[in-house]
Length: 161
Image (cartoon, rainbow, N blue to C red; front, side, top):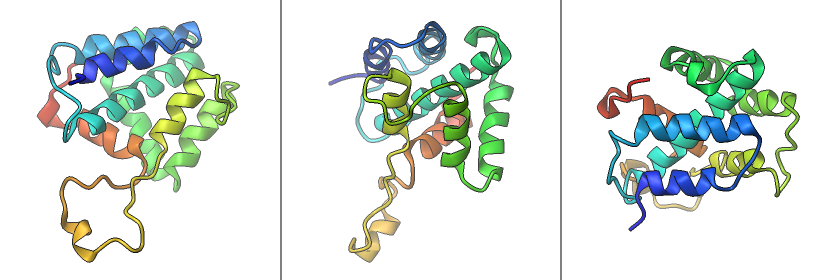
């Protein structure tokens, strides 16, 4: 069974700009201890999406500020996430920031864009799903980056950075 950190290393190994790889390194260093041995079952995919979303925030903010991802703290990640929520469309908010950095978000060879396409996948149940699917606590809701980052930043996972 693949662990969350093994999955994150695989995504990091897809390459990309130097700050992108550094952002992955920062994320992996934060989650490696607390999530050591957690596998990709049940909450694993949600947390992996959250870690990838955190990586994306590190990358966006460090690129915009001309800093290294190690200089981006939890408060800045939470503020970014809050502003995205307040923006009206979280997908548009994130995409505008990534395109401003020069990414074609549909380019299949850009690792930043490939990660974004994974994160923006909408897990909303189809209209023909049975009514009780809405009660299933294991059903994912909406784009992966939203629930993923919510879970990753939740007190339950106590990530210190």
